[in-house]
Length: 256
Image (tube, rainbow, N blue to C red; front, side):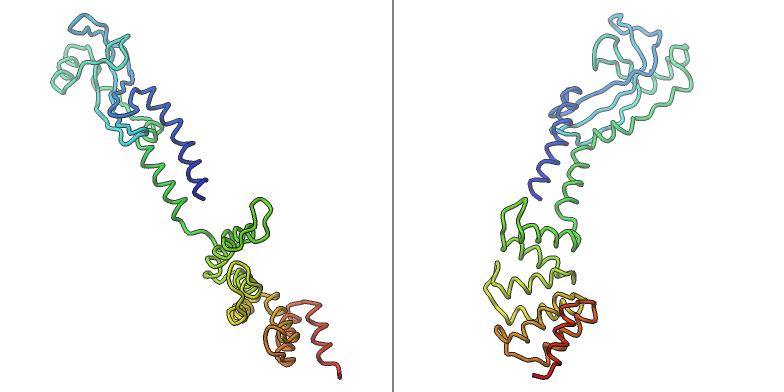
């Protein structure tokens, strides 16, 4: 999980760094002017100007916030250069016909908002990935991965930990915990811990738990032999359609 979160972080970080560099704002503030329309206005040094809309972004490798600064007069040919446009100047230019009245509407694009707050968005995503409770099925499957091996090395301790988390939600992993206690896999061998776990698994309808309890009482190796109890557990499994358990019930009932 930690490796996955790190990969997600890096995948999001790289394009954000590239975007921040393009906006000249890897660290600190970055001012961006979006051109709206050409205007017949000259700057104080005779520059050609255009009507633009200015936003300010704060970056800390990624976007921290984006602020709406309103209209400015951008200088053509000079990236990020502009003349501020306060309300008094705006009214004056509108009165002499240099600027339209009403002013053209402008909204910051949704993608710019995403970039502007990308650091916080990523942190929320990572927090959800890290802390959001996993389903009992996914925990069980993860435990099986470590129990049986395959893509990863067999690790009974990790398998037991995942089965425990899944078992807390009354999932089938309760049976697996019983098996691990019975065989001493990842934990010390303890039949006194195993039997109650098999009984809990039986309570939620686990057929294998019924068969295992039947075998334990029938064989009488791990616990005292008790054919009456063995028959009870085999009967439960038989009622669930387990052919082998049905045969064991018939076998126990045969005169010896």
